[in-house]
Image 1 (cartoon, rainbow, N blue to C red):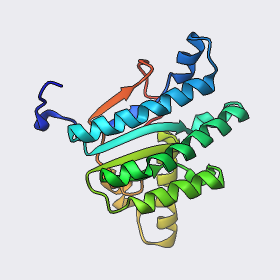
Image 2: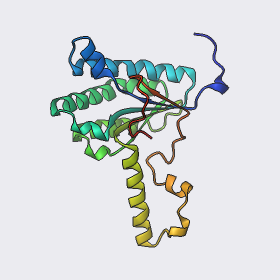
Image 3: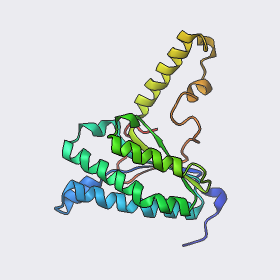
Image 4: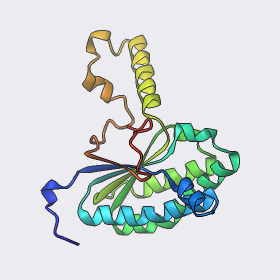
Length: 197
């Protein structure tokens, strides 16, 4: 690989992981096979990002809108996620990768939630790179949640309307402790951000 200038690398890369179902359909395969192939490529993306010195990597893995997919496909995606987390835990620990998650993870099946939170706990002290999985996530839903939480604080008297600023709002977002992405990649090649970050 050609030598890259570390000062010119993005600090935070965000990837919308999509197109695997269409990729599979084009080849006469099932969407599930496409999703399996997509998750296999995640290891390479994470490894390469870490080797390049990228400190933050966000993968938009399951959107809020994905819940309308057929039940069998959702179940398959949840099994793939659980399997990925179990298999990749050692890799994360060995390579200093901390896992975080953003989104309405309480909507995920209990087994997925348990595996996700155990992995987050076990990798909490890693400092080489932070991998963020956006699960049951939507950018607009994140903003609505932040506004609702601000309103609760106003009702409690711990916040007043005059204190509401862009900076204050950002503290209520899932991404409050995460730097903004410097680079957004959409794996399908489409040119829309699909309710992401």
